[in-house]
Image 1 (tube, rainbow, N blue to C red):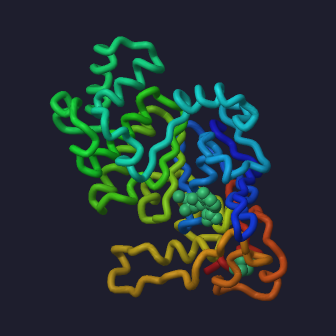
Image 2: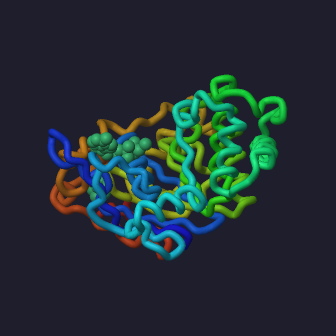
Length: 324
Ligand SMILES: Nc1ncnc2c1ncn2[C@@H]1O[C@H](COP(=O)(O)OP(=O)(O)O)[C@@H](O)[C@H]1O
Ligand code: SF4
Ligand SMILES: [Mg+2]
């Protein structure tokens, strides 16, 4: 395993109490593999990623337990200086909003070139040539002419390509993309996702793709981990999930994706809202919203049951769910 997160816990101390934003999360990704992390807003997807990358704001956040094994080392045990080195060269992150991640007063060429002068000790001239090469790789038209332009001179889709280029620059083993296409319109979303997926295969990287949109993961993910209220509620190969979800929450997410083959059908929406993480319902956190809930769900917290050797579900009634 390239990356293995084990039993990770992250808390936020807020005025309302302690929010267990990440409450025992485990997931893994191999080289050349894409793991999609799915779940509604506020379920802990980004905080988990920030803990993995070592960019969690501490305080207010605090890692209270777990391991982040990357190429065999527990990153949580590294000194900040070593951590920074790993973060620069071996793992990279792509964010939703390129405009706030890129430096507005530096040309994109300078920002890309800086990766090579700072981390690889290249001359400015060589670094500039690499910057153009990277812009070509992410298919920015007329890269040579545009290398001197500033982030705001590019469209949203092109900026997202520049973010991908920045992430790829040092050829990291792992990329975490946190809602990389959420801010784009649908056709551009598909192009950016396709590009990311293609480069991931070409470079044989591990990719963690965080999204709240099941629609984008079908073609690119190998595995899916579904998060709810700070926990993984289902984890499975993507085909298994599409064939039949083993958790009612996953089913709800699937049923709320527009499908071309079911045009005209009314879109389903999961009723209610995700809980505030300072006041998570007892038992199964999903029970107030779950169509299959019964008494035991209100008192007994489901463990992650083994559905198959490659699949887990945190639902007491996963069998029933699986059989539709
Ligand atoms: N800066 C913060 N202060 C307090 N609580 C936070 C903060 N950031 C995140 N949280 C808590 O962590 C939870 C998970 O947030 P996040 O990982 O960003 O969700 P998402 O799944 O949308 O990426 C939030 O619901 C909230 O309870
Ligand atoms: S444990 Fe109960 S409430 Fe939770 S998802 Fe399963 S059926 Fe629904
Ligand atoms: Mg997020």
